[in-house]
Length: 73
Image: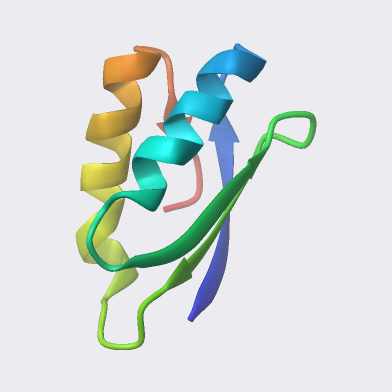
């Protein structure tokens, strides 16, 4: 399942680091951040409920950039 989320991230370098961290989370097949569009695209593994992982994504991302947020979760 693929989903897109509007995000708030202030730094392009931080966005790259966050993308790497998200790709290491169990249940994520692939993830990419478009810094210019402030968009997070995620392909979840088939047996995963995205809502269960979004809090983990946000927690990991805030370790890199405290102001990170997912706006339409």
